[in-house]
Length: 586
Image (tube, rainbow, N blue to C red; front, side, top):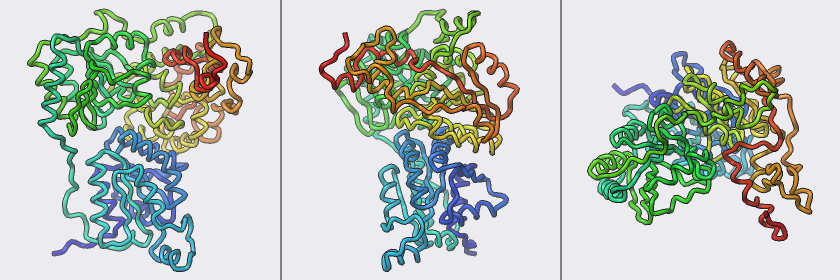
């Protein structure tokens, strides 16, 4: 007996439930409504539709959810919704997050009227392929569903690509197609990963083992360890070889930082000084799943004879290169080959080293005088506050650099968009984190400029009865932007007095309009606090365990204070200083 047909909307719903999806983020629109209604009408559906405040926020929610659950989906409407979402999806594409974009499009009749008469329906540009063509640049597969005949094939192909490549995919469905019928799913989706050449993987592993002969080696773990689910393989390598490791900033918390072989976050020049100095003394640095991004490297040169870099594109060993290598195969074979040779497991620190990266800062918080909050003092205190109950979400800029030293006790306990760096990511991402891990409490560190981009996400969190903590670090300026072009205002007593006054102060266009951030809870709901010194911070922290609502904590910081991790920028001229050849630093 032939299976009863289902609508295209129901077919997609069934496939998403098979993928284990429990939350669908997005903004409702009439072109997508038949699909959303199909889920709403099904009282047994496993999927909860989360209607967010805007498409960018919904996309950031989906991105974070995918990092923790391995897959997510976001639904928007044509043109205005899809184009607004684009920034978020580009971030997921760059950072390898498997997100399905569902875009409802005008009906077939609307499309024909546009072609024949030039009549535009809502949100149309006049080009039937305008939306899908844009998304082809930030997805690994994109399909336009114009008929129920090939809808199942296109839906399955899109989902298979999302699984296979671990990156975003795009599905555009004409509004009238949603309610058309097709056969229900009859076979499982293809659940597999890309396979590399094992012969190449073995060659690479043997080459690295030869490089390591009688040398002191250290491992450098990156984000692909988490993205591809290779945490156990990585730990097996570390423990079998009894070798220490650091992580990249993008790879922070790929495994528990309680592990005795974990020695910190290496982020090039932006690393803690002791981590940078000691890591660079290792004879052979073996990067596993690390990406070559500016933020990941912080000025560190990976193209050296003593550095190995294995990631999705192959394995580079100094000047040598093996393409088409699966990271999983390489890690397994590397363990096998290293155990055949004599190497030295490099020790970054002797026994008894203090674990906390902020010992001085923590001790200062105990002083009796009123102490203003600085980035380093703040994050030093946060390193004691954060524990296994929390997932840290850090925004781009100074908050990310300050938060890199926080000790994260549990794997996947730190989320940051540390390559794409869309400011404002953290606040809506926390919604995705809490939906993915309802047993955890999300803690957000966000600058005032970034918070003003996406603060509406707090409204969604209150609607969902989340208990997220948002620390708004308010220095009154776009600090990281000022630092990149002209760090002179941050140099303190070493500031250069230039003849052109603008080079001596923060640029006017980097000044923020200062909000009363704690008062936003009067609009969005939740609790709000203001903090101007370390004693006030301590008082607020002591209350947080008893607060079950979303909380905004407005932390005032000096305008030109910076985290120690980025202080190295002060030693070099910024872009504006460098371009003016009449002035130079002494």
